[in-house]
Image (cartoon, rainbow, N blue to C red; front, side, top):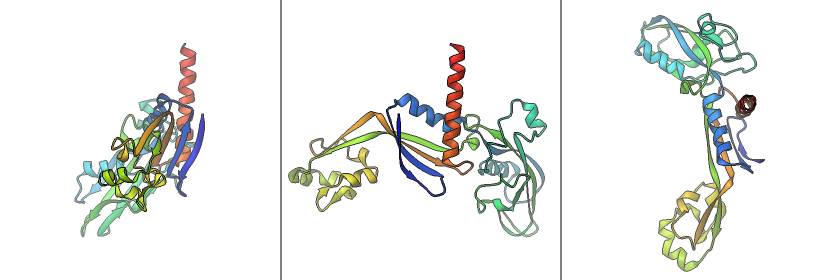
Length: 257
């Protein structure tokens, strides 16, 4: 199997790479592990001391649960039983607080955390809005969990597609006949540009219109894998953890058979 990096942002929250020499079962397993198995911190329980904002307690709790929290996988792990959650075990839970009384928006950076490494990822994410004399005072408990239990624990979005191979024949007559049926972005000086089709991700858009002009074949052992992190973990951390989980599952299966 061979990996070739295609694109990676400076903040390490978006990455795409090409994987060759594997099948759909393997690449889809990685996708599912990223979305469903890689653990993160998310708000699970609230103690509402006061909430006179426009949002009901339940709606505010829902919004807080979906706010990504920076997660340190070296310090936190999944709880092994319910007792660890109820007892607020330091290895799998984190206490946070939200207190605000100033008129205007209440943002994520108004929240405080017992662990300075683990706080809300996006400081200016709005949580609620206060009018004069309104107030919110909450104690929040974040718990390690997995996306298969609730999407709030999912670290990001992962998807893949089969590598498209383009065969282009720039025939003037065919271009004139079918030009109106193709996206205008693919043309450069009345010629079809292969680079533009690939860079703009328009392979599906040009497929099946005229095979004599543009023929698209999809490889069965080469894939493009894309990952967008919500911010709890970097793309590298997500992929490392997903790989470790896959290895662990394979070892468990080997013991069983």
